[in-house]
Each structure stands twice: as C-alpha cells, then as structure tokens.
Length: 102
Ligand SMILES: *[C@@H]1O[C@H](CO)[C@@H](O)[C@H](O)[C@H]1NC(C)=O
Ligand SMILES: *[C@@H]1O[C@H](CO)[C@@H](O)[C@H](O)[C@H]1NC(C)=O
Image (cartoon, rainbow, N blue to C red):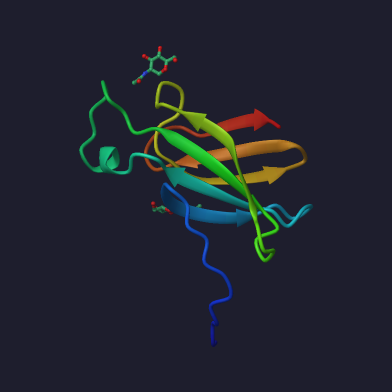
C-alpha cells in the first residue's frame, strides 16, 4: 500500500492512539500532556490524561477541542478514546478505563 501525506496538524501534547467517531467523522485522540511522567512513575505526581477531538481535519482550519482533561487524580495516562452512542470510553496505558456521558 502507498500512503501519501495529506495533512499535518501540530498539537501541543504527546499524541497516542487515534480513533474515528463513525457518526461524525471526527478524530478522537488519546494524549499525554506530560508524557515524561509515564516513564518515571510517581504516584504522588502521576501522569495526566487528555482527550482531543479534531473536527474537519481536511479543512483550512480544523477545530481541536479538549473533550476530557484530568491531572491524574481520576485517570492517568490516557492512550486511546472512542465515542459510541453519546458515550466516551477512554483507555489508559496502565491505569483504569473511564466511561463517560458526552
Ligand atoms: C495505544 O498506544 C499504546 C502505546 O502508548 C499501545 O500500547 C496500545 O496498545 C494502544 N491501544 C490501542 C487501543 O490502540
Ligand atoms: C488534581 O486536581 C485536584 C482537584 O483540582 C487536586 O485536589 C489534586 O491535588 C490534583 N492532583 C495532582 C496530582 O495534581
């Protein structure tokens, strides 16, 4: 298969897994705003969580919104997120998963 680069979007965070919301075509991004904390784990200073939504990725100005953010007190190290039926499921590297209403 031949892949051609179509778009580059700079995000001020460490991007992990991507998923597509099948109903809207939006991209959901599991991110690590402070990725270095994943490697030197300190329970008193845990890695945080962040989920971004990218709308209209191919447009001139894609819209990037923070769908979920937490400093690690609830959820640590979010690596993937997906949406189904107005619910958001967030997975993490080695912490629990979180299931939320949108
Ligand atoms: C997400 O990325 C991590 C690497 O940070 C990987 O270990 C994990 O398997 C990926 N999960 C999914 C659902 O793609
Ligand atoms: C995270 O935020 C909560 C509420 O704002 C605060 O009580 C807690 O100390 C913070 N935890 C860390 C690890 O920063």
